[in-house]
Each structure stands twice: as C-alpha cells, then as structure tokens.
Length: 291
Image (cartoon, rainbow, N blue to C red; front, side):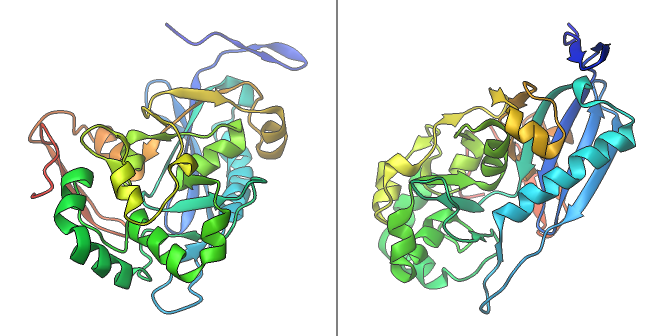
C-alpha cells in the first residue's frame, strides 16, 4: 500500500513517494533521496573534519554532523526536484563504535571518539589480560581499540570528570537521529558494536559494563533497525528542511545496511567492502566469533 499523501502548505496534497537516507562516513555526510522503487532521485554530501590532537587520536565534533545534515537535506531535495512533503520516512546509517556522550542537561561532553582511534591500546591489553575469553563469549568479539568498551575504560582512567558527567551514551547515528526526534534509542546491531552488549540476547550486559564500571542507566533502549522511533519535530524541521511529522526509522550501522542492500540475505553469501576500512562479511546461522 502506498503511503498517504502529505498536506502541502499553500497547495494540494503531495504524494509521499520518497525516502531520505542519511549516512555518516569517516570523512563526509551524505543525504540521499530514494524513490520507493529503490532508484536514486538525488543526493548531496558535505565534508566532516576529523581532529587528531594527539598521535593515534581520531575525533569529530558531533555538531559538525548536524550542520552537515542541515546543509545536505535541502540540497538533496533540490537535486531530486522534490518537496519535503513528498518524503515518506527518514532513516540513518553510520560507522559503528563511535559514541556521543551527553550530560544531565543534554550537552555533548567531549568530541566523539571514532572507530579508528587508537588511544585505548593499554586499556585493550588490560581487558584482554583480565577477561579475554569472557568478553569473547558474551560480546562475540575481542577487545580492540575500535570498540566502545576499551574507549570508555580509557575515559574513566584519563578523563574521570567527563566520565562522571555522562548521563546518556549514543552511537553516532542515534545522536543524529535524536536531533530530529528528541528520542533516545539504538538498534541491536550498534549495541553489540559497542562491546557492552550480550550478542547472544541483544541486551546490554551488566557483566561487560561492570568490567569498566560503566553505569547501565546511561545506555539507551534497544530496538530493531526498522522500528519507527518518532517523527521530525517542528524545531528540527525548521533547521534542516524536512517536514515536521515525517516518520523517522531507527536505522543501523553502515556495514549492516550495506550488506543487506547488496543482497546478503541468505546463509553463505558474502560481501566485500572497500572503504576507509575494508571488511569481508559472510552470513552465518549464528554468531561466529572464531571466524
């Protein structure tokens, strides 16, 4: 069934025949306008600066991501020759393992530590020494500086004041989505990508979080990637050019979205991805941490 027409200010109803996909990459943010048949109607991108204040560090300012959305959404709609009222839904993807931390007032505490940041090498070694087998059993991955678990242990040991101020942890795409909806949640794929969740149950792991003293109440509810989590607020609509009330879908990590989009939907199929980081993904009936 086709989505219902959307009211268009000052004119007739506009059929909702488009989807908006927003992807945050390592060096840029792209907004794509997709027709319901899957073809591309228009797109626009904007660069996002990465900062390395110390060797091995890789950080970005989340506010730069939001500015890129406000720049690219109007450009992408214009490229598609489309009105915002024609958008049926919006969703997001982004690199996993990149977190945004907010305080009790909803303010970003510090720049986001990216997935390619290497500062937590010592914390990774400590976690492997103390609990390597258990982390692998619960989280289906070994500790690595890429993952949020050792990154947040680094934060506790090196920036304790920032650690103490955290009231909400977001994964990158979830913080961006929250700027549209004002809601707080993540999908189970990005949750597992923090190495703070139980990959067997897709729930937050008190045991893994306890290894670094991380407060469980700062972790968001977990939903599926296809869950409609809210609508574009009036304030967000004024800022970025989308229509207030447009449904917003949770979304997921970039690799999960890419492999699904490439057709990896049956056991045994695989996808090779060549981007800032290269990955080989193979669909198995269950998690294979030994793969």
